[in-house]
Length: 209
Image (cartoon, rainbow, N blue to C red; front, side):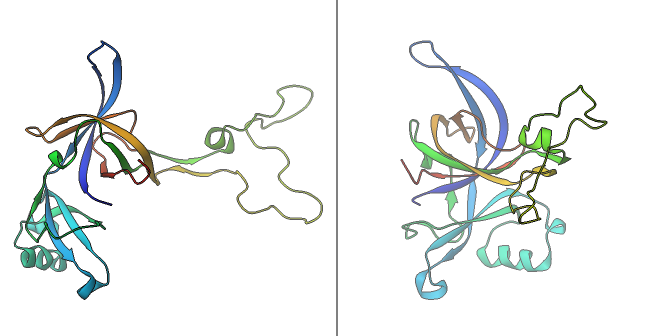
């Protein structure tokens, strides 16, 4: 990983390229982020930087976090995220990372928490086929059919069943950064990004580009 930043998903819109083609994009308010801690091979066994994002009142963080921010010489922040960078020599505690570290046309990987849908049935969660609506099948139709066999008389692991749907961490690879607005700290990424509006996302340079 060469670079990374924390951002907030603002929503989706569309922009037009030079040829007039419509490009669906997700707008992300990325940064500015402050380096809250720098980790080195000598002290921690690996190189990384911990970025802090979004100001918060001191009363909304605990004493341990308050001391952590005070040591770095920065104001309290709401979100912290560690990025293992290949080269951290240019960054020190208190350094500011802005969205202009990325460039238009560059491919990025974005991690976010997907929308939570609560406890749902197998039909909605996995798009399974419903049971027959006629010939005496019922009274329940929105359920999965036979789930096991006689030998072994049990259900195998990872069977698609009812349960929690969404609210999980997902990473989308190789998204294209279509436009960068350094003045407004905005990055427009082609396509959809995990999470709801206002959700926190983590942007890094693509690992497979």
